[in-house]
Length: 326
Image (cartoon, rainbow, N blue to C red; front, side):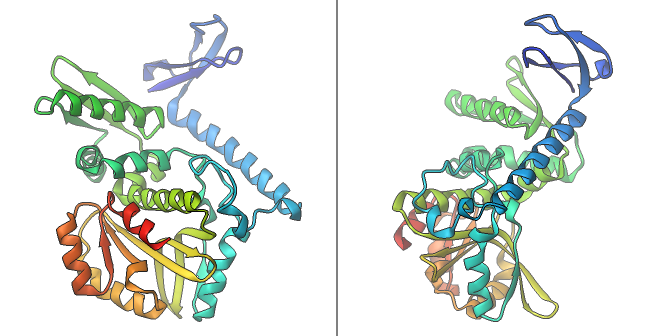
């Protein structure tokens, strides 16, 4: 796929890939504009975005009064779906200090809680209706593993309502640039999903979507309840020299109460001993040590919770459980 952006009026237009390197006239104002390969165009756009964001962070760091503190996050009216407010050393510091008190060193990925992109919106939609939209995730994930360039979503056996919801979400993924193209064939009742190959997009569909969903659910409830918190995603801890673990989603509530969420979209049972050991090492209460499993039902979750001294939930029930804790 190719794309052009009018330098005069800003109109974006898709073109056939064969037109890369040629010129086109804007459909709105007729200004001549070059046609780029879409991946090349997006990479340059992201380069410019991250350069500007890094410059903004540098300016904020140079102005102490403007640096966000963890105690201010819960009370502020920032848009949790479009903010880099959480991507700061000050916001992560309480978590690092708490882990240090347990003789555990930690390194944080501050960009992992930057919600100025679209991963969070897509993840919330998937988690809220996983029974339906999970099929799109699974088809894309499988196609990625096989190195296919596209996958086909069949609608012929879906109800009209479900087919419309799937089409709407597929178009939204394309709008978010999580799909390269979304081709609806109404005669054959299917949708061809043309994949994006960006590593971040591949990671999202291979399982990171559930981490984003868990993060956003807890952020929303914490903000609604005006709970003071610090949060991290993809936190790497070193329990002892040479023993490193990545923690999917970690919250420190009211400066003292740790909450950990391990997110799984595939098989998890072979790692249960590891999670039991980690919970004991961190000394986190079972109800605050959560395994969020995408495809288990609530009866399974209750049984596993009773057996293993941890709390099991699925994507839809996570919000309810978190609400009982805050």
